[in-house]
Image (cartoon, rainbow, N blue to C red):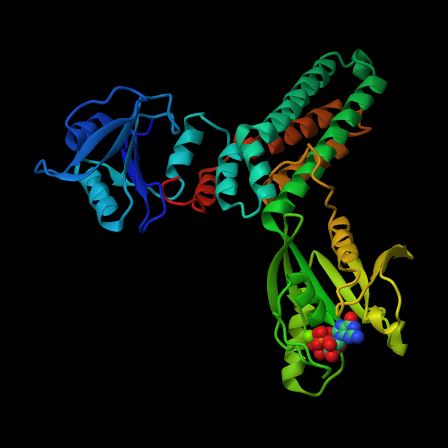
Length: 444
Ligand SMILES: Nc1nc2c(ncn2[C@@H]2O[C@H](COP(=O)(O)OP(=O)(O)OP(=O)(O)O)[C@@H](O)[C@H]2O)c(=O)[nH]1
Ligand SMILES: [Mg+2]
């Protein structure tokens, strides 16, 4: 599906730099070569050349590379010019390409063409952006694996099996007198169970990847003066929040990004929760409650040294919210830090002041958000992928045990298949593609 438009963009960051790369893709790359280089380049060979303006004067000297279709990133004819990095030179080169008939590319347009030309599927295209945006070695590693197609292949293999299973089920429907005995209800149930199991495992791995990509929202909550801000400073390893012995110190939400073992956390420190007549403090408490409501995990901080430790059990936090109870100020009790599960709730006893027990808390946080030390099966994934996997799982769940109604089973299998197809881009709308690629950088 070759596009009829020649596009051009700066592929390197704008500004001063050693080298600036300008890329063009589409038909008429030969026109660019003739106009800019005065000749046609050999394929896939770096050639030192002058990049020429309309009057024949050199704009720059650098390396030029020609990739004939379809063996290029986009699958189209491509020209790559590696000139000297600098705003003036890059802008003149771009302007010259436009003069010769190219138009500036929109964000992600090169990758979108790669997808449309079958060079990669949608999940792979998305991982291109994920790799570029990765801020930790972990995130980059898993994005690259998705880019290479590990995630897509697993999804496609599962989708393929769904199709095969559906064909079998539909085959049985053609012989109603034999019913599901055509393949044996027990075997069918077993096969469906196996598919459901694998889909769930895939969802788990993808959820881990999504965590790595999107980060985890952790909110510090508790009564005033229990040491929430002190704990934030400890976790951040810098004095981000003001700490005083006056209850009600923190008012606004204080956000800090940090990483534990490469997992990005968005930690929010909040105003201590209590009844107050002070309108400013009340506004802070309202914000605290709003932050708590949208948290992935709440660190419910209490003062272990205070007599009110039991009353501070956080009964006013919304039920069902994943949480860790952090019993702080352990130094005042002269006790050693410890992590445990008490009545089903993870508890970490530590001291924000001395830092003792901080590692226990970090481990507990990773556990609470469901992070399993990077196994081999992690997939870089997005919220959109998780939604599709969940939908597929729901369809398979609806199919289970319905062997008396094979048309329903077939329909659910087909809807699960469609959900998986959306991940790799087999069934996608232009609106979705526009949304995905608009978040890319220009030139990618
Ligand atoms: N001994 C001891 N004191 C601590 C510890 N953590 C915090 N504190 C002290 O407790 C007081 C309150 O600490 P903050 O971190 O401001 O408490 P907070 O929960 O953020 O309080 P608000 O912002 O008012 O809600 C300060 O005087 C801290 O130095 C600890 O682990 N041990
Ligand atoms: Mg505070």
